[in-house]
Length: 107
Image (cartoon, rainbow, N blue to C red):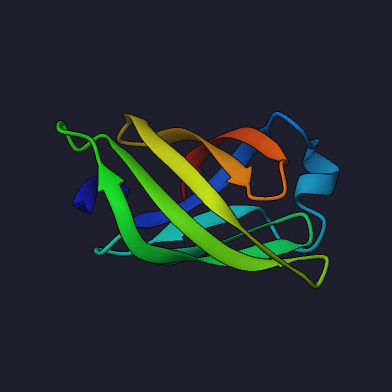
């Protein structure tokens, strides 16, 4: 899905403020042409897995992820929806129950 290929910088998260969200690096999501990629916010980083769902119009994807959160293993899913060519929204849903919506802008 070419419309998602990009580095997206997370500008807002529902559960964490700017300082905490950008604690180690500027919070981001990076997707490639296969919608594989990676992300980092707070002390949480991970990789997206290739298995995904794409909406019929191609403007929303759902991905699984694995990674670490403060060095502890974590996993979950994320949905990402295209607002316009420069902005996405979505939600990280961790398997252990934590959830946070986000907005991100093209890098």
